Image 1: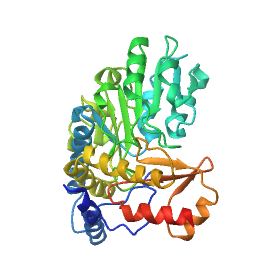
Image 2: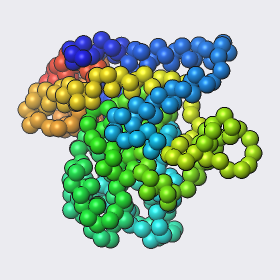
Image 3: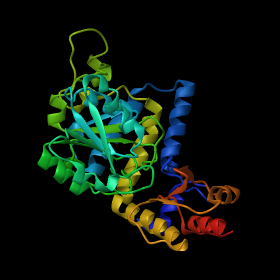
Length: 345
């Protein structure tokens, strides 16, 4: 699909440079959600059709990150999805995370301090060299929320394997624009409302078979049953034999908007989205006289930037006192030029 045509698939108003906070729905996803809401309002349908969207999205996520759908569970938020994994680490385990990691991927480990679990930090760009035999788990955002830095995935995985440590990846700020092989990790968690441009409240976790074997599905429920429709009532416990045992029951309408958004990502191709997004990010950096990078998220320190951009109707975010701008499939060169003009003014 020609990248020139990409923005036509959305209804974004000019000046939105904040996908790292939340993505904008493709028209097909927004329309599907509106139809589901209308059916809900009028009581025109049963829930099973909405539920089918959850399975479509699961399959799509598996294809996007290169894993088997049987190894993917669905949920709502990073912390919820990580909770059973963190609960399964041994007493006294050491978890290594980046210094400025988003807390939803840190707190699930830190709450186990009472049983001796220690969370150790390191600079994101030195994570691999800080992994040694004392580290049991290395958990990190593949793309850092605070500044858009892309962690050296291959180096971290290699160091972790050499040390015998479990690899847990939060791909929330990466999945949808950054190609990567999820199967290299033990766990890959992603919520879909950012770069997968879905309604808030849908997410996924890839769990390797080895991780599942030592992890208890603490939120066991009817939707996690081997036969969903035969698991409504009573004992015995009869959970799915694969990662579906870790599912939580889906927020139906949100999944209706998630499946078509993710399928569009597949249709365009993550590599093509990467070229579009990083190209615009680098155009923005070049306009500020800064060297190019490898991320769709950039942070810059320009005096008065927040006020200048806000006055011009450019929507970005502020993180650690710096402007964070993020560029996605619906972003145009005109958006970049408008932001640069505002900052120059």
